[in-house]
Image 1 (cartoon, rainbow, N blue to C red):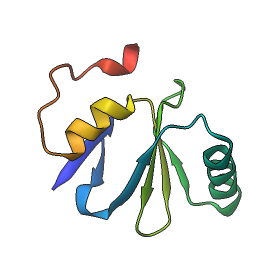
Image 2 (tube, rainbow, N blue to C red):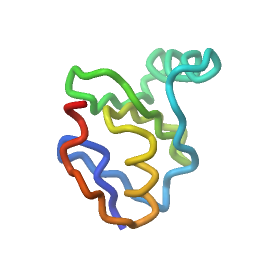
Image 3 (tube, rainbow, N blue to C red):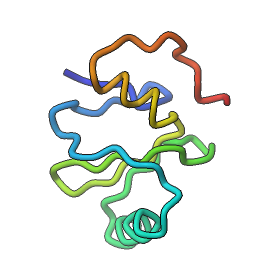
Image 4 (cartoon, helix red, strand yellow):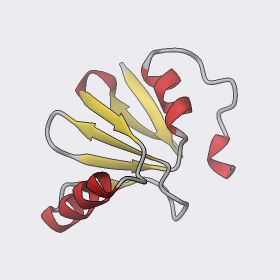
Amino acid sequence: MMTNIGFGNLVATHRVVALVSPESAPIKRLVQDAKDGGVAVDVTCGRKTRSVIITDSGHVLLSAIQPETMKRRLAGEEARDEVEEDE
């Protein structure tokens, strides 16, 4: 199953290991290391990063979708508002 992570971008749900908020220092370091290592995928389309998705392959996905919305999507629940990226 594929999950929309914003702006029409999809991730294989079974590959997601963690969904975290980008505010903490360890996650900021993880994101910077991923960018330096070439395994970061930024799908924010220039918007603020609101959630960070870590996959089993070690890729780090940056999304503009709120973590709560992303959690519902990953759980298979229908998002009531598909355009929460504009918040």
